[in-house]
Length: 137
Length: 137
Image (cartoon, rainbow over all chains, first blue to last red; front, top):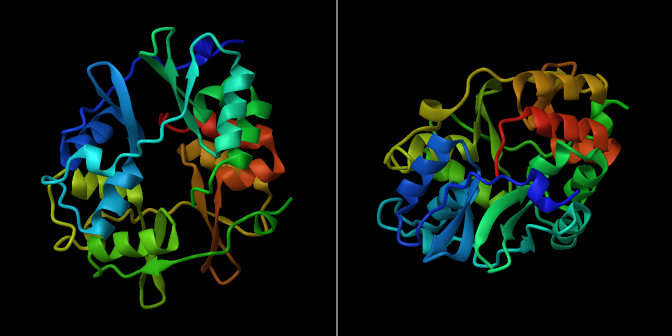
């Protein structure tokens, strides 16, 4: 099975200059826990609801005055859309993460693959990713 | 396997009159996404990082002026620590949640069980729970 067979292709993205408030609104509206940050087709980073809420507030960042690019994680792990799903799961395990950005042959953002997607087709792969993931209490 | 063999016993709490800024700082400092809300010794609710993201950051409310009791969930879904993890998983699936509060014989919260914890015992149970939750990417 390939990544493209189960990844999510309907992707909502954020622009780097969006405010945290805008990002939070979009996460609420689209029921998402994380969103990629993209500019001119380039994947710049990823931001989660926890980054926006807990981290930003703890740091004293205003939700309307702070841009997404200040808080996002610039380290985004990726895989190719035609890679084997097991390879993608292995990347997640190695990096202790639960989601990957999926790129096409031109390195453009094609979709997102999360452990939730993997769980639909393989308990073993999903379970292994969860075991290795940084705890999310 | 019983829930108390797998659950995370770290239970951190806040008060209903604490500000969401204080709650966010606390969650950040101790690396959790969820706090019980205690009024003296009585459990009155649960507040999560998602609550803060959607009900504070997204709405433009000021975290320093918003109280925990304005955003917390008062309906707390629980299971008993001596119940089986299968029952816990069933309850989580039924309510589409990834973590559940665990109570002891005194009806006090003694821990939390998350999908990550489930994965340590059963990839299948963990995957089933993941599948049933609203999909976060």
